[in-house]
Length: 119
Image (cartoon, rainbow, N blue to C red; front, side, top):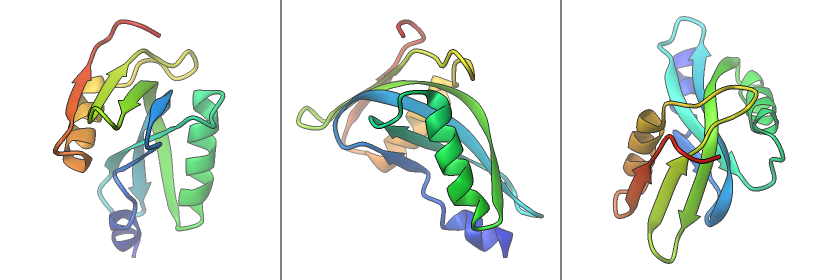
């Protein structure tokens, strides 16, 4: 059951355009393997806002998550580009290489880059 719930969790949910905070989360269900997901939205003032809302949504389906870190996304949809950079003061820097691979799977026709520099 947990594996089925986990398979329904989208790997990536980000805003369609703009610069915003993101978190890389590891989602688990009882007896199911974990999977990493990316969440990024402009409404979030803090990385913790993204984590808390996602954790609440997942808990309703019997899933839990931990935050692996955060950063920022610059999503320029007209140019078909996403740049991953920066860090979260509260959660530390996410592994931007992992985030980039998740984004490439979701946006295969985009140019997706990352850097550890910047905030």
